[in-house]
Amino acid sequence: MSKMEVKNNQYAAAGTPLATAKSALIMIHGRGASATGILPLAAELQLPEHTAVFAPQAPGNTWYPASFIAPLSFNQPALDLALASIHRLVAEITAAGIPKRNIYFLGFSQGACLSLEYVSRNAERYGGVVAFTGGLIGEVLEQTTYMGDFAQTPILISTSNPDHHVPLKRVKDSGCLLERMNARITVVAYPNKPHNITDEEIELANKVIFQTPIQHV
Image (tube, rainbow, N blue to C red; front, side, top):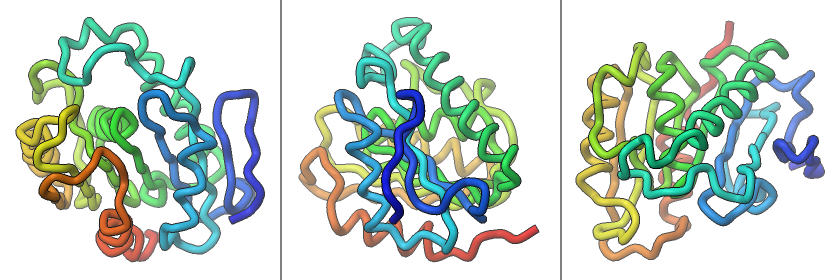
């Protein structure tokens, strides 16, 4: 991976420069963490050649204040601002000529929830999505909140059974909703796994998501 760069405290970047990249990965950190903290994980991923890697930075290191299964109003306006920051980054990537079908998303914990929420509100064919311990956001899941067709985008959600922050039922319900939106879903719950990212999960992400060839124009 090339040297890490930080742009205007908005995101950290590494990998292939965007101007010459063929694909992109957006990595979203968890609560209390940072963009520069999650970005080195990209070195353990079997990314396509010529991938630009980005990690947006949450204000105050937190994307939204309350639990992800609290009523949506408890997390506003921070949640909308977080989703908008990802949308701006996606727009910057596509403006450089990378199609959305070659954009990947990866998040952990709060970042996994935000990754799933963003792609599900803007569903179309992406390169793939990895949600390490997360689910869709809100007290209840309203199908009308989520629009579009994933066109068989591969999505991996991994978690622990149990996890003190992410109920397994919400993980499963999220997977079912995404599958109805025509995603190719893999959900794995590891017994009594700590609230972290394990080598086994990284290996699974490489197998399920990143070893799939990118989609050429």
